[in-house]
Length: 361
Ligand SMILES: Cc1cc2nc3c(=O)[nH]c(=O)nc-3n(C[C@H](O)[C@H](O)[C@H](O)COP(=O)(O)OP(=O)(O)OC[C@H]3O[C@@H](n4cnc5c(N)ncnc54)[C@H](O)[C@@H]3O)c2cc1C
Image (cartoon, rainbow, N blue to C red; front, side, top):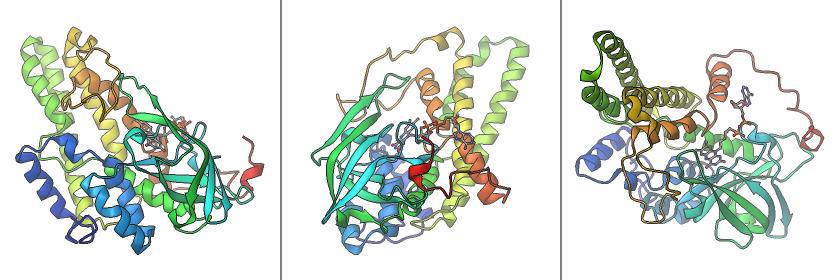
């Protein structure tokens, strides 16, 4: 709703989005349709809006929101996840094009994507944060190879992506040459806001699963267990409600484009809360919690007619392990909050001013 009119939005205040989402849910719109393009909507669109030319706005934005173009984020590499600024994938200028070689990893939805947000090293002689450039890459370009990576749940929602002499037009550059880190920060800040959770109605989302499980299971508990569990469930419900209200407050003040480091608060809190909620559900399930009722099918989201909307608590508990890793680990979120929100001294960064080429690999 808060994107410009004609470019995917209606130019309204961000708070209106919640009203629309709730109306869609109440009307029975399947949740997976709302989330069909999470990386495009949550991260690609704000980055293109902030750094793209008018031509790029026209070309990309609307199709992200209609779901015609799924997007993926090509940042992480083997050895460069938290330290993404140290990445090694190379882009070399050749006339009107950049020739890209390297490997990306953990690339969510790359197998469905038409476009990717690509960060590559274009100047290895500059310090690591200064020598990267950001491009929009057509995922169907010759030389792009996508291979599935299966997760603990059996699902392969992410991939390895290999680039072999991939030609990316110079006009696909977002921001300036060597300014890729600045552009990437916009993507990452928006990622944390997106992962920090949508604005669910009160009592909905993961906490509703716990309340349902509690209602079904509480009669089987002895009085002492019952009292302890009642305390645990109540505490988690309170934390979920505090998180929901914090999310609404932050969304109401958000501007389209560039959120601040505060997004990390909700990312950190929701990731850790999700794990505790699903751990509690599985514990309450007792011995049933040892079974994965889905079996172990190797599925790919968006393929094989994959339309399942509800997973078991056991599946969700396994998937929630990723919550404190994806979009930046909880340790990294604490670093960001300590340094950029609380103003505490930064951790020592001995490689910050060295030319990237000279950093020990
Ligand atoms: C489900 C899922 C989906 C993902 N999707 C994408 C995607 O679409 N695109 C993409 O580019 N990436 C994606 N990622 C990758 C994700 O961003 C990285 O996994 C994450 O940033 C951590 O990097 P790493 O795996 O290399 O771990 P490492 O950086 O090697 O971290 C290993 C451990 O060291 C700790 N650590 C590292 N540095 C510090 C530090 N400075 N201070 C304290 N502790 C530290 C970490 O917290 C962690 O516990 C995804 C990951 C997951 C799990």
